[in-house]
Amino acid sequence: MKRFCTKNNIIIIAVLFIFSVSGASCIKNKLPQLPSNRDNAPDSTAYFLTKLNSAIITHTDSVLTEFVNKNYADFKKSPEGFWYKIFSAQKSERLNRKDSAQVRYHLYLLDNEAVKSETFIARFGKKEMTTGLESGLLLLAGGDSAVFVVPYYLAFGAKGDGKKIPPFASVIYHVVVDL
Image 1 (cartoon, rainbow, N blue to C red):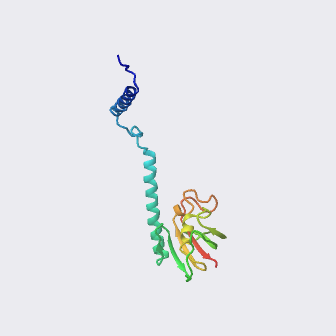
Image 2: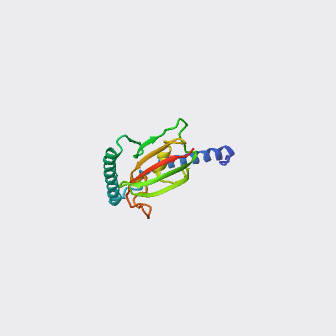
Image 3: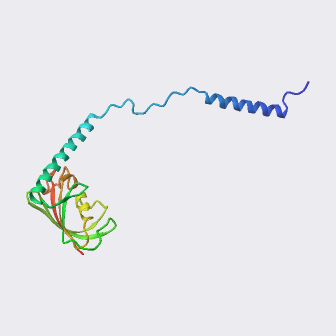
């Protein structure tokens, strides 16, 4: 009687065992993956607040459009949503995000109440100034002056500055970029 446990037989049995185990794992009946948020209900508060904010912005834009057309008819509207006019435009290159520049400005509310005057070094991308002012300054070159009419959502927002600028106040910047 020959021995059953020869080296070739053990290899054949091991190979058959591996194929049978791997084949069985491929045949499993897996349940489909369900999204993890399938039971989540939509957040009606967030939806409502988004719609309300959108309505406030639309109203603000229409009020500012009317204000600019009445008081500053030759202003242009930027893609970001503020109005501007550049005076004494220089032939030099515009400021860019890598630059810093000395800036002087006077800030007014829409009723022409002066609320702030400041001279500062503008460093872009550092969140050291309002979004509207930063975007407006990037339209200017050294030596330029400009006026920006900035809606509240690009200025001091829904809180104001806590001092002279009230919540939801759109503002007017009279700006000079020093050489």
